[in-house]
Length: 344
Image (cartoon, rainbow, N blue to C red):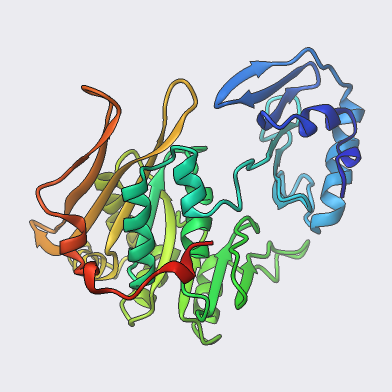
């Protein structure tokens, strides 16, 4: 698929500064440029919007109708398409196309873009090399998938990585990587393959690292169980801070069933997760890692304890403040072998 497949949106999709395009109605088309939304002067007809969506969905094999009024699909150029139609929406089709402009960057390249400092970058490379379990948190559009992709690309080249996503977005630069994607039910309501099923199947594929694009519901329990079996892994989660990410991870597994209790989940989370990397997007659109926290493994009043290692602060000058402990001493990484093979 080339940009001409986007029809009337072609110029917007070709603009390197535009990160996302969305259509609220045929005459209300917006873009995100450097993290800030703008109303364009482009207007379409209803038929043009519908024809555009149908053309884009032809490649992804996803369908959109009254019984399935939502669709989430990856386009051949790596963009992600989401569409909602009436009666879910009030009147018009709501279309989002997210471009992921800085996808495919390594951790070092992200550091050069000021997503993190060089010290945080080196620390994360060593954490990945050591096989630590990493949770990437942040708000929508904060850059979680971009950072996760860079982290996965930093694993040792001898690793076999299995990625699990609702829609293909991750493209780690690894020689041995298998990507799995969920499958919606057919017209008869059969054939659905959810994230929970994919996580279980991935464990039978001899992984040395398992990566879940995003955990939202009960699949969090399956991931935690997998990580507690000695298998390194990573995932992303929506949260407002590193602390909130761990609290949410303690809550989501409760959706798996009434027999899952908070007291059972707390020690599982404390043992499974080693590091939380939190991203934020500033009002001016700048995306940055703002917190790196260590999960100590201790529990107090059924709450998993975390220790801040790095925290970004604007006062007195933009810089990363360190916690009480030296991150490199915590993980004893000064004695680890060279990680040059992981820097791509």
